[in-house]
Amino acid sequence: MVTGQSYKCIAMLSEARRLYGEGHYAECLRIIESIRTCSTRCGEQAACAIALRLAGPIVEELHPAQ
Image (cartoon, rainbow, N blue to C red; front, side, top):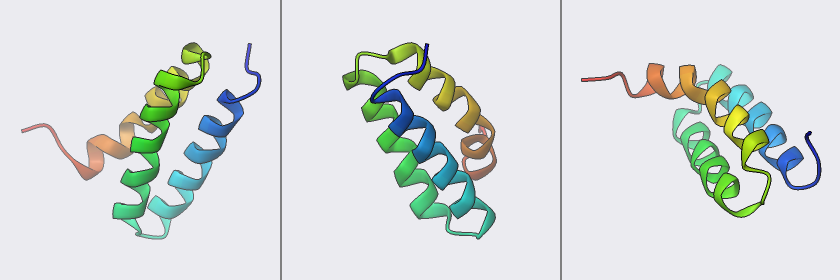
């Protein structure tokens, strides 16, 4: 179930995708890092973990595996 603080993670993911689409990669990565922080604090880790998985392709494109 998605409730409370986890909505913040999902909203931040939406903003990260928007920034990514506009070419603001540093800002995008900062927001994704904020999602990571949120996921460890909000008590709704499952929902925030989903947001992080959805952000994975963005991170992979900006920081390809070596």
